[in-house]
Length: 186
Length: 137
Image (cartoon, rainbow over all chains, first blue to last red; front, side, top):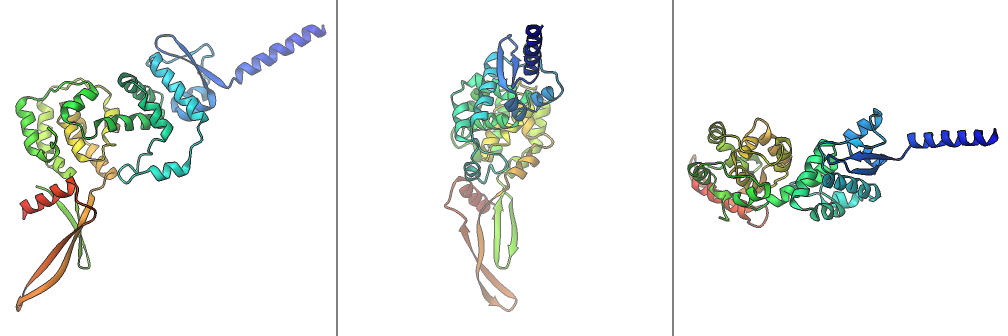
């Protein structure tokens, strides 16, 4: 009898522990599972915070059909790194420049985090951050892409975004003449 | 061509040049271009592109983005973008016009000499601003 009672208690404890798990499991569009700290997920993503609060998190892996495994891996990596980082208020305030004052400048580790990403991974990550409502990650990725545009010619900007020129020759010439001051490099 | 927005304080005229006004001046032509051009396939949703473009501190980058394809042009000359952009990137103060002295030529007729003091060492936008001012003058 006592042994059964002990087993019952252990079962009860296991169930409580599962309900109070401090991680959530996320499933990418291609079926890969990733674990992320519940606290970091709730703090960094408004969408995941809503799902956690609403109890719609699936212990077997919450489906995120819009996000591929590489992007989700980067999201989880970012959440884990963010959970471990100690934000330095002094660093943030000293790095704000006049022109970008309304936007928070990325911290050093965030810069390194996006710098190591391939072109496609960066663009997938900005969409994942947008989908998950991760304001800070969105800031960091948008900042990186805007940096990639700075000082570039229209041709180089098309390369960054992998888009085609759909202006006619006449239209381009017209733009060039109207705004000649902006075309100093080509 | 270039608008110089000034507000007088005593004898110092604070002059700021809104470089993005270049782009604003072309808004009508750009809008007709939007109507004429088929929408190009965008790399990212419009809301994300807007977020990215808002971070371009140099209006020259914005203009070159606009010149790269018609869907970017549509976003930049969309209903809210430039207002939002100007809130985030107020026109730069490039210098001061100082009334140095007033020379009285005849009763009721005088000549004021004005000196321009750059707010910072000359750079590209200052140079183009001054050139445009000379063109206008």
